[in-house]
Image 1 (cartoon, rainbow over the protein chains, first blue to last red):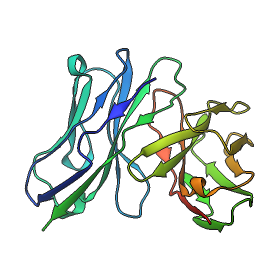
Image 2: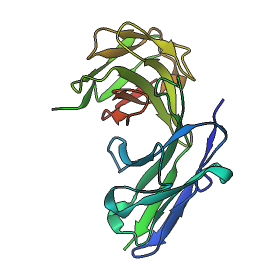
Image 3: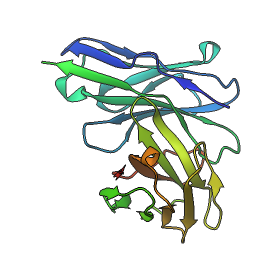
Length: 115
Length: 112
């Protein structure tokens, strides 16, 4: 079965600092990759996704992620964070084909941005 | 266009009580999912419905049942609630396996 690892459980950084969150998955076949964000008290929202093509994916709010197939990784980055980026971030992986859209989520990384 | 809606938002149950969590989507999506979110464990799939008329177990189905009432609605039932089912429950939907899942606002359930 697919497993997804997010190595950082809590990250605290100052505004304007750069952010990189790691995500590794175990399945070696074709995968769909997602990063979701959950702001305090809100539901999950999609930040970005990768299905195929250019392995460098740009999402909303200045986030980007790079798919490195050889490393089974899909790390999330933002060059300069803002206080409003305080949230929990989840990496998710869907196996294809015939996965019926089922996603395996990582355990999440709580990011706190201090003013 | 409300997206994915869930009711109720909050619920407190006593051990052994039953309840049904409701989920509806207005995006004409084929597939719907129920997840639970627990601290430090991310989201885990309970049940899913790939299309109207079908349901299947996910990673943590024990203690739950589901009904895909029609294309719009997918309910989750706890027949005899246990404290281990205290969690936040999210419903999601997608048009297909190659599309994004859209999540509802969640139901925070406490079982005493």
